[in-house]
Length: 167
Image 1 (cartoon, rainbow, N blue to C red):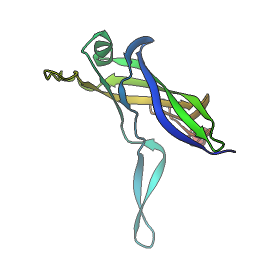
Image 2 (image 1 turned 90 degrees about the vertical axis):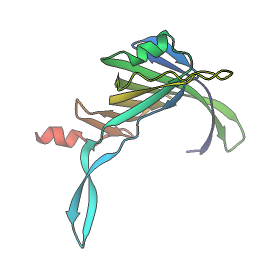
Image 3 (image 1 turned 45 degrees about the vertical axis):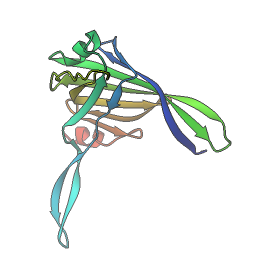
Image 4 (image 1 turned 90 degrees about the horizontal axis):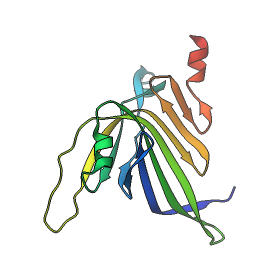
């Protein structure tokens, strides 16, 4: 497999429940932190608890407080999709664009204050609590974590499937 070097993000879009909410927004997708348990073995170590993750959170920073901003800020569960294109440089010097998508089941944790400064663009950061996160890069699923349905897949392996089989 040839190595590719990921370069700049070319553009992105954000959708809330299927409708365009933002273009060229700044997005931070969820970090997945495993729940750990202490084990006594030659001292104390922390080991991840299979399939268990801490609360996930995403942020989307938009410009104007418009209808897209409002759609992301509305109470309740929403299907949020972030699409972006990233340049990728091959070892042979060829550049290609890679399509990426993140799908989230999310809810607004805050309705942010609106930042205003004369001569500057407005920035408004919506913080989302995420219960389901799926990352697809170049058409291949990389990560799927669904806390409400007991799914924990990374690189095509479902690490929670064995748990469900034993229950």
